[in-house]
Image (cartoon, rainbow, N blue to C red; front, side, top):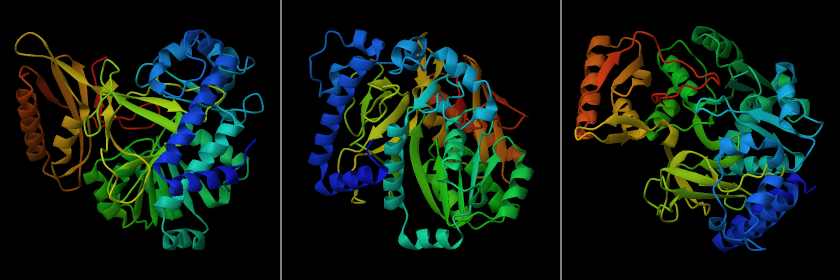
Length: 455
């Protein structure tokens, strides 16, 4: 198996050589992955039976989806011993988080908030690729002075994640500890489901130099820091699993006085990309392919928001991820990023699954992207956290956590007026806007979904 060090060196060489070298690696790895999938996965052997012998163009591949792959799990995986029945028995025991399944696979699951729970296996070779890409991201996002400051404080880290079940963030941490790559004395894992005052107390006592967690939860903790209840001074704040708007990114940075690192990752690819100072996410194009597409899977040009994006991972062998509908709406930068990073740059605008549909005035259907609601409410002062829940096709329930000292009635009037104007602009004005008395609620995975469409 190729070592992490060798992969790091190859990645550095590819970046130095420029876009042509990155594209060459992408083509060669795609051809090899398609060959491997055909040879080892009955599902892909059937799916690709009419394709050319050598495939270097991802658009030749059929689109795959999580629900289909999970339904064909035993045919999808390339190891016949890794059956869905066995892995379900394994993940039924929360005490086995981070333990290698069948002695060789890291198991992670999705929380199922978008309707289909996923179960994913990471073999040692794929884990080495993830480590190499994570080191690349750290090298390009952390300055020597920040690294030195963290080393002085012995890399004291606090990870605020869901600790129930085999969700990815906790599974990776548990596996890293078991393998000796992360020492328990130098890190704390805090449950995202803990009451907020308890989280604040734990962080105040531990005083991490690195604070890591879901972006929505870190934004909530930033509100506690600004209110004076949380009093920590991390050098680095790392946002995992989700993204933040530019405004919220600046708010988190200001609240903690820290360098904020934004990452792009998912169960299907634990290292998709990393943030640059200009707010773009640079993707590891030598190890993955992202295709922005519309609702009919037709290509969307750079500079235009996509409906979804198709992911091809070139470093997942146990479960090949090939032209997979990831569900993220992205904006692909059409020109080289001024930050100087040669890797392609994107912005994630939200999830296609979170689109809200309403009846229009002419009897049709209006669909509104989550970003429209997020941008509106983020522009209003005095909001720490918000959540818009579509309870029926004509009802929105709005949950708000206000900042300390906010005038709640004035804030609600601004929210209601803004949402009504947004809906009217989209030619749907028969929607009832409800003021919720309950606060924003976490998903089973511990995240705060900003927009929740009607089931």
